[in-house]
Length: 95
Image 1 (tube, rainbow, N blue to C red):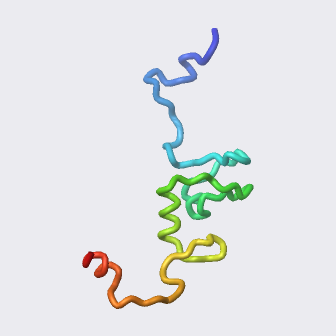
Image 2 (cartoon, rainbow, N blue to C red):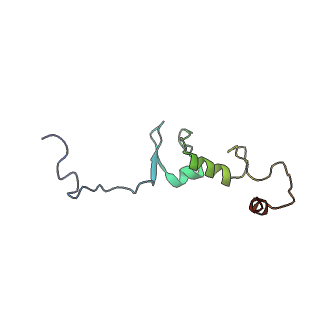
């Protein structure tokens, strides 16, 4: 008999295992990585330094929420120190 038997799989068709999104596998070295740790490391593998491909939503989230550091190369805030007469939220409401 070919394939898996009924003993290998639950009869209701569900597979047991970790919830989706809990772990990620590095495409380069195959290391299994905890998603929360990957987020902290800005989606860079801790074993081989592979940079995961990010969708646009994750990329914008990283760019918009992280302060500038040499490590991340991301700049948020007012690095040139320009001041405006109105706060941003007031200026955007006046348009």
